[in-house]
Image (cartoon, rainbow, N blue to C red; front, top):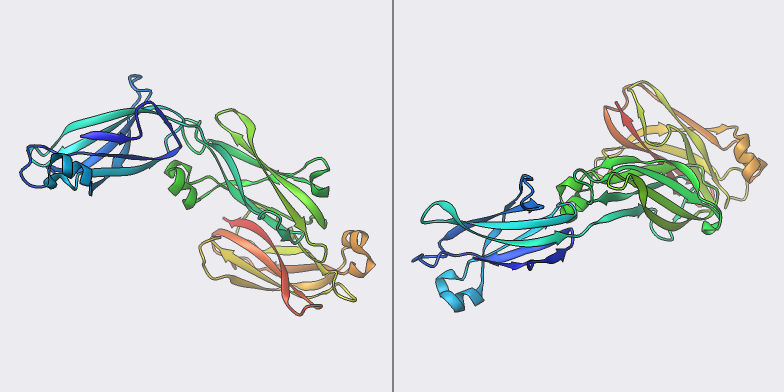
Length: 355
């Protein structure tokens, strides 16, 4: 039985491959081994309980082993992709189950150091994206230097206007703990709840640098930072004022309000219809729920002062009846129909939880 990877004393990434081979030389048929299980002992000798990594894939063809020891041992290889271990030193054990004795009667081990992984990643907006005045910020963050959990307990969102030349402005606290199966697959199930989300509304046209700051439980500081450059469109703008980003609401009636304009139109506000939808369980692919057509023409002096008097009546409102949405998480999306292009060319979104 042998551990071939990782090598003893090696420093490995937070996700790494374990491999080797195991057989019983006294076996007269087959390899004499029918399974291999793996354990990781953090700070071996410290008394910490081992982490059961699970059964390795066993039976991988190993022609080199067959040439050295006999053809019956060709299917003696084992492999496992390991992820989810925190930063630190580990002794990895592989235990082989012997068919003849019906016991885990042999083992090998190797000592490795798992490197730290402290990262916050931005998924949206995409690099150099052009968005409307309301847009999503999402991604994931983790710090495997923490002893447990994702290693993150808060995410703050900042915007730096003027292509980042101006000082960052605090926008809000993102919701954290959204399931990210892709992150779990890459780094381990303990990091599944590493997703964050925030909806920005009412941003002025121009270039910005988005700053996402994640608070690490390992350092007790906002030590993880990611930045992304993007642009807010100068023409089609949609904003949601209520419900507020990441809000939690009961099943009572609520209003969807905001404003929408299209500055490419020759006259008027440039928007002639606003359709409102609720997307259940965001990312699930479930069909959207049509909530209705918003009422337009509501005076918005703040919009008129920013963009001109012709946009005074750019406000909208839709009253959603109580009980229209069951309990759960929804993306409320307002689609804006341009009178200039004759298409639904812009949208705004907020994520809410109906309790």
